[in-house]
Length: 232
Length: 194
Image 1 (cartoon, rainbow over the protein chains, first blue to last red):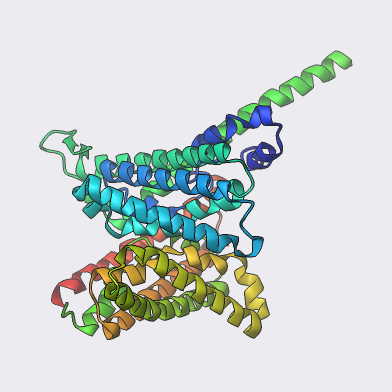
Image 2: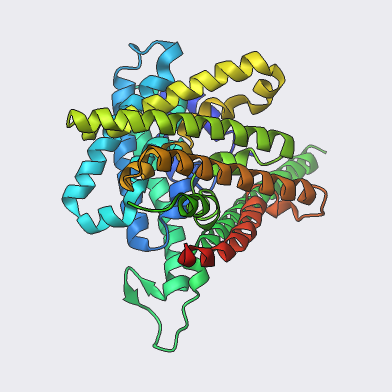
């Protein structure tokens, strides 16, 4: 529960606390994939190899930093009724930039990512951040928020890509890991493998967070018991 | 491209089902599949949006190619989709206020449903003509609707089961989706004959 209340306290917190928060917030506390479960389409579709996962993560990060910054810059000019449409138009502009950028940098990556680069426009995560954060906060913080969220997204994609590539193809970044006798578990490269590995990662994360929460509760209870003893 | 209409239909509907095999429209797939009654209505709303925006963006693409402005494609498509969603929203609010309330925030979010943007993009990449595009849009959105309804039916069952607290929620839904996806892989063999 403490995780879910984090964003609220972050917004309301005094500036001294919030300065470095947006970045860490996106990276871990409110990880877009593992905690908020946003941006599922590229998470599942592009993660059949580590290289694709990293490329997709970086492309999304770039779009998020730029669009968050731009939206935050003009946030006072946008009328409230048409804000979503404005956000989408700005995001679509940056996605077009990334589309041509990736094509210019590496045609191989461009072919591997295919239609999923234009589809960054309809990644819920990219639209959710301006709505929840950049529309209300100054430029620097919004860009930092975009960077943190983007890198958190890239991190999650890499986690998934690693599992799927190692199990499904027996390689990491194209380098074979096992001997010649390794029989690749092809299922993990296919769509069902994406669903299963994401489910397993989610379970792992829930388990870890539950453990932490339980530890914190135990410590608190022990402290309360101690004060009770002292006072009695 | 001289693909036959049947092949396009089967390919988008079953073999490369938009949700279970190409991973499009995941957010609403995981979010809206709790109850069958909302799920199928959501599916039908998305079907409507996809078909209308597919036809409109086919026309828009002709104009863009005519004026050599292909770089505006993403922006134009998303604006068409946003307008269609707005139209659907107004229509549903007028026709069925209860459904409007049930769909809630997911209705405007159809705009950011990747499945909706993917149909115009794919039909442009594959150079489909108008008839092919329409069939493709109907098949793809029908596939989305079927997958959403199937998952919601399974989830209604698992709600009654005794599931460990940890696995409840998204993780369980993902495992169910994986099993459905495995089942849909069985259709892959149909592709070779087409």
